[in-house]
Length: 328
Ligand code: GLU
Image (cartoon, rainbow, N blue to C red; front, side, top):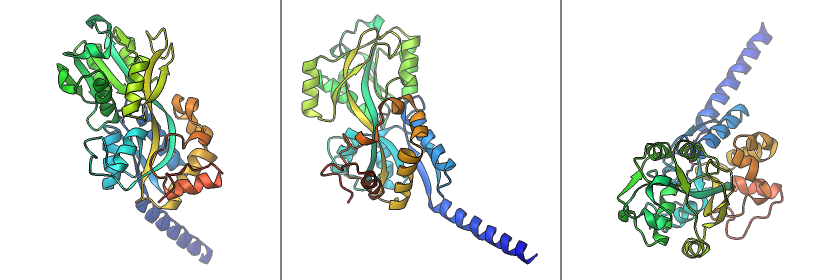
């Protein structure tokens, strides 16, 4: 009887302790549209964190994308998020992107660079559009409100001497809606900065007559000069229906980010879980991780300081930390 009572007491204390830490350790992971790549990855990461019983509860949230996610990390609404490396840099420094210009986001910290996100540029084949220059006076989906993709659309338009106002109508909303409008012929083109093989572009290519527009080398050089985070990338033949030859474009990189609000051990534990103990499971979450994620290269393209817990993990793994991104 005595033993039983003691055991019960022990169980109770254990349950209380677990309850308390779970409450303290609630991790909401920001992503993007449900048909993007961020969302399935955030969902998979949340599931892995929950399954590992680390003492935190994690969940994924569908959002507008990088700009929203970084703002929400700064405000404390999100604890982790997938974000573009270009937008992360501008946000941390308070540059370029209107939402952050003069309003930097000092809480933002890096964890790992994951995979490339090429700028996909699509036009309906029945609208006489041969280049981005022909988007003038057309209805074009430019990205979600709060996406990094929207910023990239404006940058590419700018490289062709166009502004959003030169479009007949810049259409914003979820990429899911963008693909649907293209399919219905209610818009003429679409920009989307997203991992290869994502559901929105796949669906658009399957259901509508679309052409993937490429960028010439001179245009890529021009873009890179102004926006150095945009690097040359080739969408391989066969990536989508109708892509019979490689398409030259530019890419940014998706990264996992977090906040200085989160303590060192929490971030360290998540890093160890995803990128060490369960690396095989992590890569299985999405084809882009399977194809591109490499821990040895997960600091290439990182342009914001690391979280202290991430730095601890990289040091332990003897992965060199490039100058300028040390935890602070
Ligand atoms: N790169 C996009 C953005 O932040 C989101 C892509 C995705 O949801 O996979 O705007």
